[in-house]
Length: 209
Image (cartoon, rainbow, N blue to C red):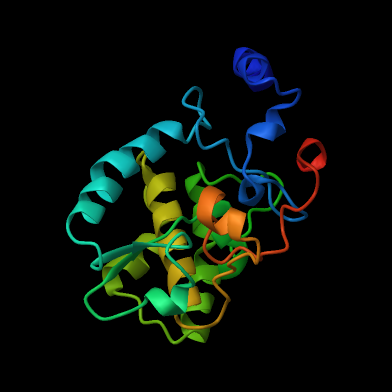
């Protein structure tokens, strides 16, 4: 159905396949499904509205606060060159990518919308923290053990924590930031923090798995 919904957009752009709407870092690769097209704003898997909100309410005000106080990775340079005291570095993460980095990949039949599935990942998250020498606050540890509760936003809190730990993983040097060598990707499309630079290189029409 989502492909039919995008037909009018594809026709307007002269594109033949919905995967042509994806950036290189959005494309699927073995072990990770594709992300949604960043400019798509309809349906349960759209990310466009969140992107607009992030740009309007976070990114634009942050950049207006001072040219050197805020940098955007990878557009402003390699991560290590941007990290300085008193400076905020804004980056993009994808929970499904960070699942792999923190050992919480979902198995067939599991879903992040399920509290029981999230609870089964508690051991992996705790193990990652111990291996990385990251101390979890007691209230966060309780949230992880509890599967982030039964409320509807439990999956969002789960994703937020996994995304945060994935960023910490990169900052601690346990994983490369992943900046691609292609300057056009770094300056125009952007990249997801921690994603290997050699992923997503397949032709768009064959990228989904």
